Length: 538
Image (cartoon, rainbow, N blue to C red):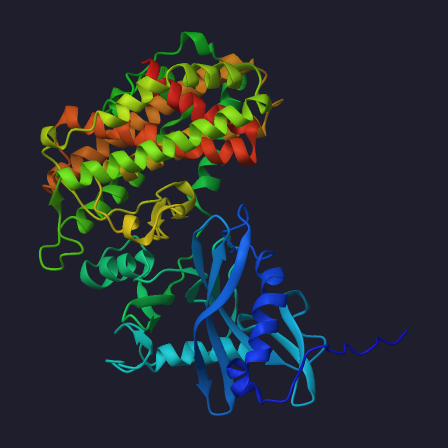
């Protein structure tokens, strides 16, 4: 059976090189076509909002001889009165069998039938971008600025492809050694991932993050530097720390049954108190194994080293440590109260989705909303002696790769819900620690939820074991982390201050998580609810 040829209803009598100057094309492309395409993309972040209209904010050519591609910066305006900017590189292809899943528009240009597609699907485009970075001048003053580090010299293109599936960006792999990450949602400023990665590897020689090799930045009309892409080292790995810890924690819970352990008789740790390995009771080591705690020590050390490097700059003001002040307190409280009120509304609208233990804790939270609000308002900068630094900002086990019992930290973009300005605010390092602790909590409970019939204990007993394990995880981590940062004279405050900030940030993180769980998977809302309950009821 022969295929019928695809005939486009869109015909334009202008060459591809001038198509974006054609008003008729732009009208069709922006209003009739692009909305349908963009809402289906994994990287699109406005799925819970309704698009009002899409504008072509700016565009630029990516060209070599007769090869012409366009980089589009789109402004997506929503009826809720806010907007996002997205980056899409586009190409025109005439092969009907090509890139069937990533076609944006069937179109006829100068009587040639074809398709406009996302250019990342073309090897010729990927090769061109790679070569533009590899051959970048030391100083680029053009509108589209390609940059390469000193490490990225005398390198020729060999191969390219896609690196896995990502939600918010598109990562390409080159020569099996380099990763080029195209940022899809972009901001009128340097992307923190580009800024932090370059700082840590070029200025500070931090070994446990991918090396910075190059970037593409675009100068907007307002002279703002917009990061389009960053080229980094590919770290060979055994998976991310989330996957590795899930496997390790599954072994820990399986051991309960194998050794017939009485969970109610296990010694409980004091939460968020520093522990050395030899402080852990023998019965806990016998249950959880020494290897897991040794991994936690290494992870704590790498986290401390990241913060030490981020807090040791005295020339570049974007990275110099600073003290707490009134402006930060006002910014923080406004942010927290707004977020908390938003989550309260979500809880009240989703109570019907909860039952049992989750419903009980949700009702407890609602009855104590004034107490939680007062905890957020209880932040008094005048009592704090520590310093604020640039931090990772979205630190969890999924942002960390594992290679031969060592850890490599990725993705410094910051919290997805935050503005670019908020992501660049200097924060207490304990905020990253709190993010990782919430990730530990999630990994432990996810193991229980993913293996409901495997462990042969009641849910109540498994939850008790989960909290015990969490207490020892966090204690061992803090024991190494605090010792390491104090040894390097990074000022994270006195003991009482550290605990206050840690608990404040843990409460912030758990409240943040609660909104996601109630909207996406209510059965998991018990995890952030338990985290909040621990902090308001202890």
